[in-house]
Amino acid sequence: MAKLKINGEIREIDAPDDMPLLWALRDVLGLTGTKFGCGIAQCGACTVHLDGEAVRSCVLPIGSIGDRDVTTIEAIGETAAGRKIQKAWLDLEVVQCGYCQSGQIMSATALLVTTPHPDDAHIDAAMAGNICRCGTYGRIRAAIKQARRSGDEKTAARLESRLDSLLERQAAARRPADDEQPAPKTTNIRPREKLAELREQEELDSIRPPLDGRQVMDHLGVKPGRVVGEALDFLLEARLDEGPISEEEAYARLDAWARERGIA
Ligand code: FES
Ligand code: FES
Image: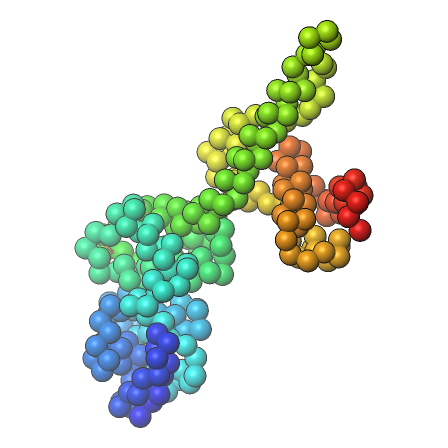
């Protein structure tokens, strides 16, 4: 009798220890979302997660699992990454006959958890063991990219709002007062087109402030809150305007920014 934690519940399975997990899931527990394809770890149809890692359940004896968490396709939508992947799968109508797709979704979700911004090479490596006889590979790749991008919506919204305010400041700097000559160009603000171009090139998701929130808090000795958000916006703006900035330079700018605001 094996006791396994499956989809968050302890399940007792009356079966020999060498029974592959796939058989236990389908034939003993009735969890038939996980599919049998080849039975020799070659097709990926039977993929489940073991402590979050994608594994082939057709060659995994239940006696070897111990107290590790098993997650199957039936519960993957309860995780943030699983929800994003499933939504992208539906949005892009990835599925054809569907037989391979629970395995594809399990592998794609595991990828997104370990690598939130996978590039083509990451996707190829993670999905190489999942075979689709219907040839949905192109849509699978596109859906993983869509799921990846959806995590950047917040960043994109923040960038757009920064650009709005930057463009307003730029316009104000260029607007001459009634009795003055036009002001010289003193700003170096990238226009909205630059953001569109970055998005087009799918580079947006790789643009981050040169320091993260934890580094800002540690350096300034502040708690989470408005100051950290403003500092990150300031650093993000510099990154967007000027391209990559070294950590040393970022700290120097952060010091100057904090001094101007009287922040210790
Ligand atoms: S059924 Fe497990 S890899 Fe094919
Ligand atoms: S959708 Fe048919 S085998 Fe993949």
